[in-house]
Length: 272
Image 1: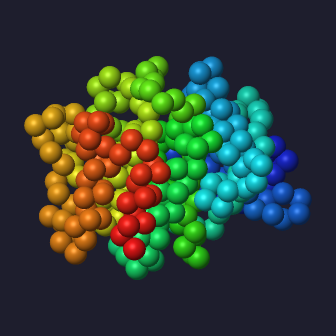
Image 2: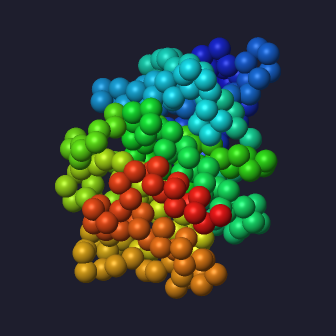
Image 3: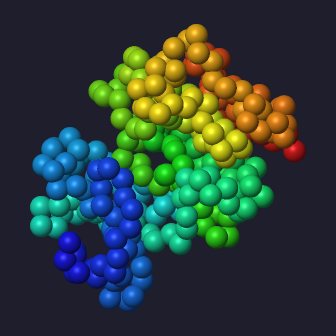
């Protein structure tokens, strides 16, 4: 990567996902941004390019008619030296994954604030007609002031009230519900499942299914005879009502899950 890219000056690289490289850059006014650049090999695939640009379009639409404080802001997208790229606002933050790994006081002291913010932003995404389909701690930024910011909408798809058959299964296995892993189907409850897994980790510092290999985790997720470990097994201080809410979100059978984030928020409000 040259120091100059698409009219921006690259100042440093940051950890990115498997398909993209991330850079912090500044413009002529010295304003900082994040530039996402699609991997060179993946950029040759037409569907991957389309998905990348569609993710940017979804972010842009979610900020109309007014910006949403919990969604990263889209600036522009284009192609430079045959590489698709996207410019996003720079968010001074750490990922939720970092906070979980290091059991940061910012998380432990404000966990219900983060749970409510995450529930609200997912509800908003659904209300605007989309499924995120990649909710996980790596895609959740936490600013020093405690504001949560949801990123990476590359897998987002139009929301439908009935099961949508996906062309393929993407996303991180631990956050993908059994019905998607097995039948490639998804609706609101796929995001609700991922939300529940994130909450489970925030409250217990564990996942409900753990194993040394991803194949073990996947097998446990899709096996109806293997229930998720009760969250209070790891943290008995989690209130029973909150534990029940989280376990309902991650129920294996989608019929046993909350059907709508509005109902999740209703029960969160009842917790006080």
